[in-house]
Length: 195
Image (cartoon, rainbow, N blue to C red):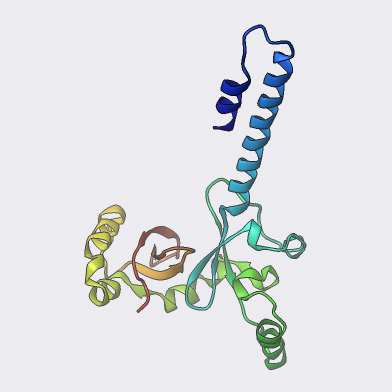
């Protein structure tokens, strides 16, 4: 919008130095476009992190780049956020250290700590065990009936088969429904998924 306004203000046919004015306006527009593309890239969801009982979307801008250097995860693709799982330290002293860092030391919460991430695949049985059925969601939240019906039509599975977990979004929450056999994410719909 800035480019056309500046052109309208500065353009005078035959003006000496018009090419310089138009060059500066063009460079400003290219710089604004580059800034916009970078902002979109930095704030788009890069990771879908399964925490203890839900999914959370994490963008590159939320992470410290130094923390993601050594994480052995495949690179970000254009297919969407990379699925990862968080794991709390297994021993008592490690768990106590994690809690101290998070609560007292002002360290980021678990979904923003790539050193606690691992691949999604091996954790699928645990995730599916903790997930609820879409039938449960529909019973607890009758307003979701149309969305559950759409998910059933889309997948060809029954609401009693499909599993879901909440996704905590920035502005809205979603129910992420999964294949009950392999944990593959099949889709999501906006609702209040907390049961």
